[in-house]
Each structure stands twice: as structure tokens, then as C-alpha cells.
Image (cartoon, rainbow, N blue to C red; front, side):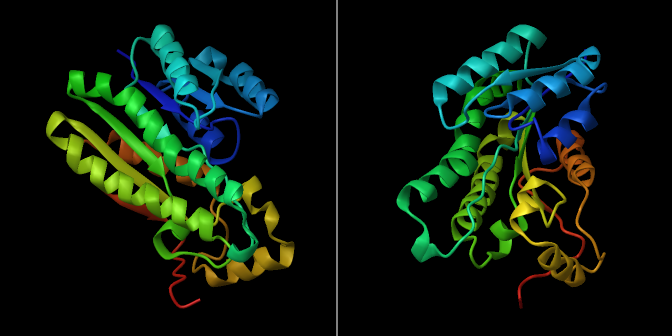
Length: 242
């Protein structure tokens, strides 16, 4: 029986790459919030391969429950969850207002908690399942002018490691991928010269392709003996001394 993967924030960037990478191998249900046109186009492109889109605000528990129920009615069950939905906010901490801080955490950290909670009961009752959370190199090492984003992605790493220990005895695995700099819309806040500077610090000399992150996600989803792991996919970029 074909397994089902549920991807939050799947209409663009890394999320869309995960959807495309999984299409044809899994049934795929992905969520979107604001980018309805992109989601509809992706669903139209891949619908014949068992890909469907559903609107969902990962900050809202009821919205998540409705999206999860939609996926279960369509495909029967959810075998793999990818908590990918995320937002960033660049700038100095002293200029960051409370609402902006809360919004970043609501999507990046609370969203992972709520969505995991919504799918876990069924996974635990079956004694199988996999959750892959998308963190970031900044969640591992921190970044100047990205304090809220870095903090929220660090929270995702702590969430991953703790939940992995909690549910492993019941056969559910929880891992995370920590991408480095990836060629997506999230990099648009940087100028061309800034991106060149970033690439000069990466041993592989370039930004990651979203598909390279997607393949790492599916690797963790499929390997039955990996749990509680944070897989860094960053081209060898070590920012510790930067």
C-alpha cells in the first residue's frame, strides 16, 4: 500500500521541492496558507501522481486538524509528516517588536508542535511513522540580525530531540534537517553581492538547490534506524567563527 506524506508549507521553496521529490513514490498532501495560486499550479502539475493541496494556517490548531482530516479522508492515513512551514524576520533585535517575534515562533516552532500533535495519535496507535522537521544552520549556530529566526529554529532542534526520545519506544521516529543557505525566495532579502560573499564562505562554493534539501528529508523519512538526529545540509559551511 502506498504511504502518504503530509508536508506543511509545500507551495514553494524547499516545501515544493519535497512535494516534487515525493510525488509518484508517495501519496502527497501539502498545505499552503497565502500562496493559493502556487499551490493550485503545483497540484495541477502533479495531481495525476497523487498530489493534493489543502489550505492550512499552522498557527491555528483547528485549521491543522481540518487539514489532517482532509488528508486522512483522501488517503486513509498519514505515514510521514514534514514540518516545513516557516517564516523569517531579519533585523536588529532592538528593532523587532513583540508581534514579529511571536509570529516567527508561532509558525516555526508552535506550528511544528501543533501539526505533530495532530498526526501523532494515529502513528502511535499503529506503532509506526516518521516526522521530519526543517530547522536551519542558524538554529545550530545562530546568526546576527536573525535572532528570532535562529531562536525558533533552535527550538525546533530541541523539540526534535526530545520528541524522538518520547515516541521511539512506540515505533515513531523524529528527525530534523538543518539546511544552510538555499536558493529560495527566503534569500531575496540579500543583495547579489551579499550572496556572493556567502558563497565564498561555503566550501562547495554555492547555495544549495532545494532538491538537495528534499532528498535529505526523504532519506531521514525512509531510514528506519535513524531518530533524534539533526542532519546538517550546508555545503560544509561552518559559521562558528564568522
